[in-house]
Image 1 (cartoon, helix red, strand yellow):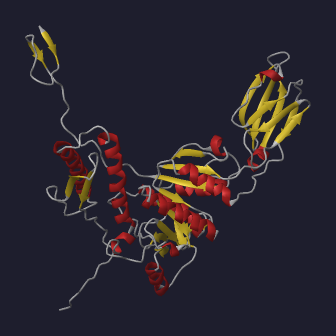
Image 2 (image 1 turned 180 degrees about the horizontal axis):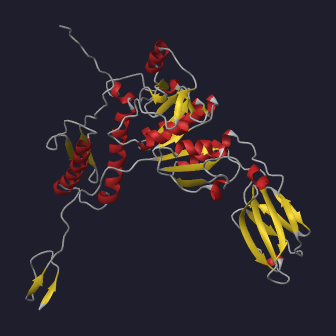
Image 3 (image 1 turned 30 degrees about the vertical axis):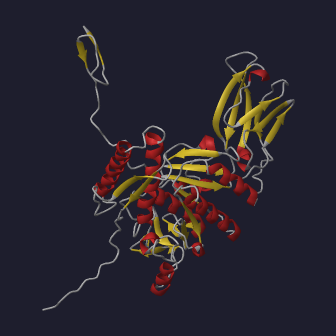
Length: 438
């Protein structure tokens, strides 16, 4: 007896024809958040390259230090909230080196961390004519090899071996001459060209140069308005941006161990917190992780002025440093961009809809679905399913699947026009209470 699957009822042979199909489910879901891009001057690591670092990952081999080290303070602050950091090393200096006869030992990367490397060579007590070659980092062993000839030495995560001379014992040969090198504005431009090709949600900028701030603000404006890539950049002391894609941090915090995080450095935590926050979450009055105070306190009048100026600031509250209000720099409101657009929670919802609709369309519909009434209805149903998900999450309200998504044919035969009505939910931030005493 014949069998198989069927598309139309046109089989010739007797048989059983069965189609196995999954229960219909939405093709797209609310995209995950939590990716931050940041460029820094570092003492170790691949220069001029984006390095993807996941929260909780051991970064010592990649960045030269443990995450607890002061040299990686900003990486640590970012990953307090972010799931992933796209880190770019702006600088490229000189590699530390050492020589032993005709043998050379060169740090894998440029930077001052290479000066903490050393080589120790000892005769192997268990094998005649063999030597144990140990790589030390700040006195700790990071690699050990047993060889009988220099040609047998294998490069490791820290040192590149060179030369063909005889091996001789040495108690401790330090590498020297490693430098970080200088960073120019051109290095930031190169970084922006590289990161533009990546997917991320926020960008932290620790630079304090006003010219560089304007470059980053222009970059995010172009990506949002011309490329349709909805991201936010976090700068310090740059409320003049007056744009929903730019967040301006006014002050910093003091950590529990006494470390002071300046406003420029706090951009790292803010970018991580903004990226990780869901569409149903506001950062208003959330505490900065491990912070016990702010570096600069302001009066009530000064705080109100800062908020009206579109500045993101921290205030001291019961032994914590908390976000006063989760806002961006937009303050020139228009009929098409009202006051709600100054709230980052609202922007997260709108940006998420933009980015997720784009992803869903490109993945499941672009070039795959006919531009007919049935095809457009498939697209409409998928958008309805996505927005219903946001409604259930509490990110939007008053959504009507019957009327709030309209998909119509465009002017060209391959075009459609979508009209979507959404009302993002904001967080309760002000309570006006009337107490009557009887």
